Length: 388
Image (tube, one colour):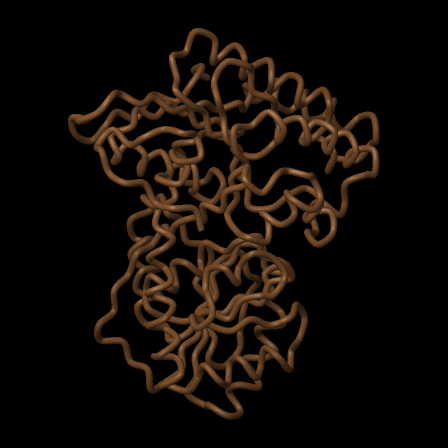
């Protein structure tokens, strides 16, 4: 494996001083599979701002990666502790020092907190959820041991303290940084996340309700609850349809169309998901917890409202009028929300508000906010977007 992902050069000649930014993650930052495509999208948007972007992948060669993760889980005999264990973080941090040695960078963007960056270059962190929030509500983090949590937390606090700013996707995560970690509010910036699919549908048919679900984690995203509730919606709207995309089980239910996993890497899959957004009248994903929900931004950019969970940061994506929020596991609340948004005029008006809200969440604006957090200017001279 090479020491770093090749730099993404500016898309056009810069008119200001050259700006070089490194984006550091576990996983290839240029890959659409890393952090749901966030890193690749940020790299692309920064390059469009005439920033030279260097992606640094802290994944080890396959055999060594497996050995390190196994060692990380050995002390507690809990595989969920492996990424935050002292040995794992120490090796990734050493790798970061080696790959950044001699690099002439103006700033770094650290994705997650599984490693410590060396001194010398200012950095900002970027997360969609804190570990303490995950420990309280997320199925993965609740399975970590007490020792594993404590070990990771101790290092995370140091990472936050040394960062120039701590950037997060939502106000939900921002509040945790302040309340749980004592990060000063002036050092916390809500930057949002952007849409990976941008769809326009001027000829959308609103008269027949067509719901859309896109989610890889079927249980956590509320798939079983959605199917039960949709069956009840069909009792009121017999022509209602539900398109399901992601890691779902075999589905055989009236009105439900199963599409399986669709990959951003395949043009035919991107075309199909864009078509599904264009046909839908409402996006619905009643997750147990949703740190942010890129799909809700995508739905808004497509001009449709969303039904989101109250647990997490997804309410940021819809604002006051771009959809409805329901409590996790609340079947009656979900039914009420789906029936309300089955009304064509209600869905149309909320979809309009969601589209307007989505203008805050473009990758360009996210990248501008990251530059602002780093204290840098865009080489093309533009005024950077304000924090959310």
